[in-house]
Image (cartoon, rainbow, N blue to C red; front, side, top):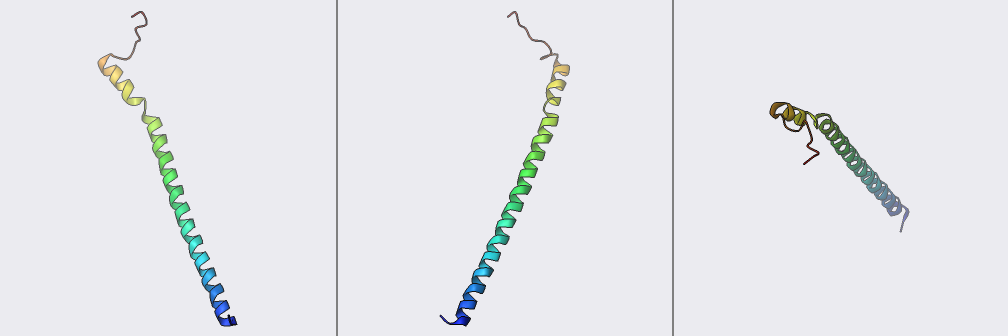
Length: 70
């Protein structure tokens, strides 16, 4: 193998490695954004979880008391 082909091989390897690194960074960024969106969904669900139950209890009169005597 002569010097020129060796340098060419090294250059191709470095380029391939740089591309793989950029792709991995893009995947990680995408996963991070999806994780943040999931956490926002969970937080929003936690804030509104009891509102419907309270409105239903007030409107129907049901769910406000528990019959423990059977």
